Image 1 (cartoon, rainbow, N blue to C red):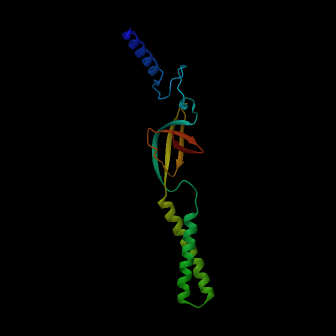
Image 2: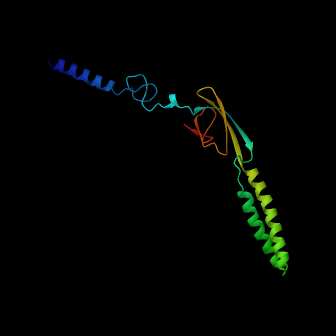
Image 3: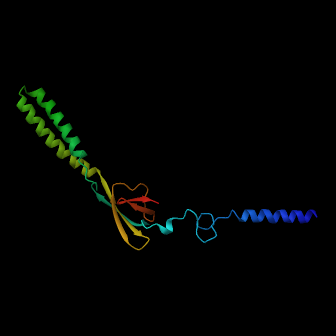
Length: 155
């Protein structure tokens, strides 16, 4: 009698553990062959990175370097002119010249400092998409990514 109860208890525990098994895709089995949470099969904007090319210069138009350079150049030129002359006209001319030179230098520095990337993605439907962005955020060749707003993000 004790043996029959023990065998029955083992059978019940085995069956209840089998109900917790997961499918190979990592989700819990739903009985219909698909897995819960596996939205990759229906993701139209998803793909695999095939190649990454590094390019010079920022891909996004940005006048920050020119503006900051112009402000700093104008202020520096004004201070230098103030110490060397009493003429307001010469101080104004120096300020404008310093702002122009600072703007050109600031823009050049920003363009050389920025690094852009062309990310080539083979989409699930066979298309190849190229996305240009300033950062990789952990994306590498072979990474699964989703394309949204003309940017690639890990998926």
